[in-house]
Image (cartoon, rainbow, N blue to C red; front, side, top):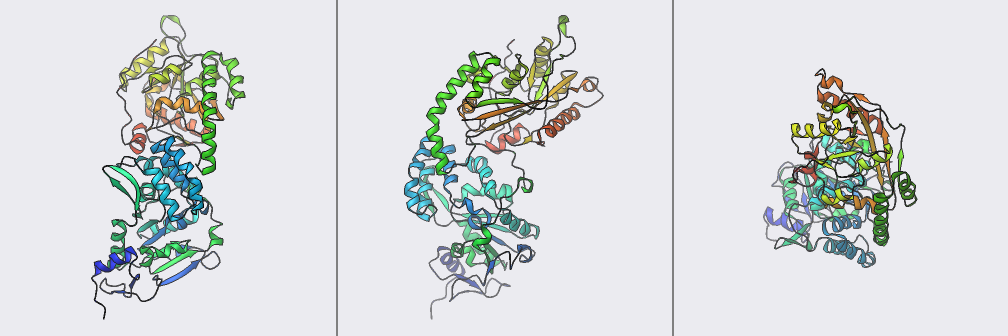
Length: 551
């Protein structure tokens, strides 16, 4: 008779795939674990299709663990290739040279099968080798936006039903390393555990090599085996059955290829958590073809961006607008008229300046407001690089101190001197169709304000960043092949009640936020600058540049 193995020996052997798969004949106790003589292990294998099994809701019992295949059970079939995700890591975490290397290796990967294990390992080597190990910000700040775009509504519904039934949701990533997907799966989809390959680290740097298994997988095998939990697997690929966690499931439901081909992307309205913040420069999904187009465009884009910048800095607005529009850099005034009436009289009998309150999309928001008004404006900012300040066609920006009394005095003096002042009470940029919390200070500065809704469209690069080089923001905007700013002046809002202490300034700020959100079709949130930078960059977003007032 064969020598009896201990439980740990059987768990380890099953996890490495060197022994026959683990079988569980009695789920009531963990001692009834024996080695199975037949394969595959899942006690029951079901083909999950619309005709026979319209919903997974009837298949999951209360408290039952769900083992979900991320590659073939959660994401859309169109996202089967992991190349775009590795390219995002290469470009955003490693730079353009690393992205070019990965792109040049693509023909070899394509000949190896595109999404085969060998091809994926080559992608991981090109994307990670030499990167400093530590908090992987790309996995938390860049990849979630693109992974959420790839989530199928049907796969998400399976996770939702499992969570509603009180069961644990264990996600298995067979292709992408665990550090690339764990932040997204836990933060946005509520996964309790994520199992996947680990990136090896040597002397504080990633080697680019992936380990076959990780200790998290062994821990999950132990929990399923010892807790007596009848786990259920869900996937759309037979390859999932070879995974150790799939072998521990009592039932595995496989989606047919025809049914999976009909899966639809998860609508934004069904997101379990709003995708308000994300980082990275790329505004497109970096497939091999689109990445090649980007590298081919860059030399022309840099030259075109320099020409656009020269025109914007030297030519008057009325002449530069049609010139820039002919190069693909356009703007439009939407459903509104340019306000002409100024505020009440200020000091020395001069007309008091007008306060314009806008949402914050990029650093050049005040430029387009100035173009729309056809008048020079003054802009205030908490942090702006001196390089960006020098490139501004509207003059030097006034820096604030992040001190309420000091900032109120700075902006009050600008208004008293008759300036047209542009303020963004959000305090930081937001790319998605959401408005951050409005700081109420603007409501205390003037008897009325003019809300200005701004929207921007770019096709290749985002002109904002939280963890990158912020002084390049304006240049990235100029390099885009085509971009468009939309400026919308809303009805003037009286804030005299705040100055008379009849209405709290916070209520007035929320009112302006709601009006602007309704006009733009954006959602209103209570997030602020600190929330954004803690999520995307791991800091509070403050800089050490001392404020200065320039008249």
